Image (cartoon, rainbow, N blue to C red; front, side, top):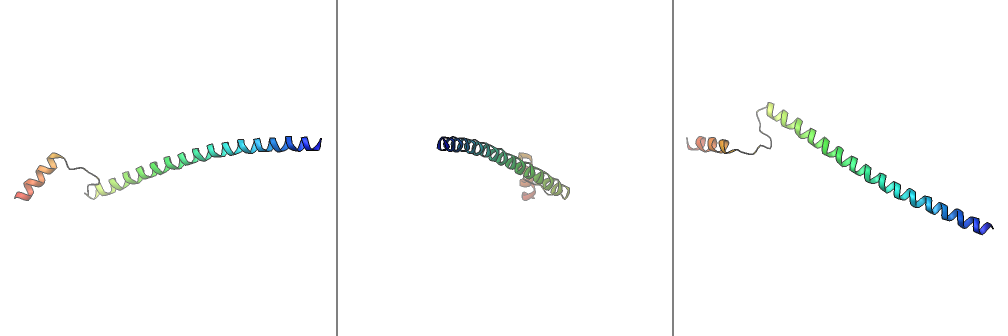
Length: 79
């Protein structure tokens, strides 16, 4: 009788452990997604603040030259 009870308890504990492991993996996945989202948000905010700071100082940040800007530069270099 003790052996069957021990087997039942062991099986129940293994089942609980498996469920806990699956839940922990799910929680880890959610945390990883949260950290990634926060990293992206912080990076976006940092870049926005940097862009605004540089813009106040008259420095273009990650701007692609437009056709108008290229024409102006060509005109300036020819004069």
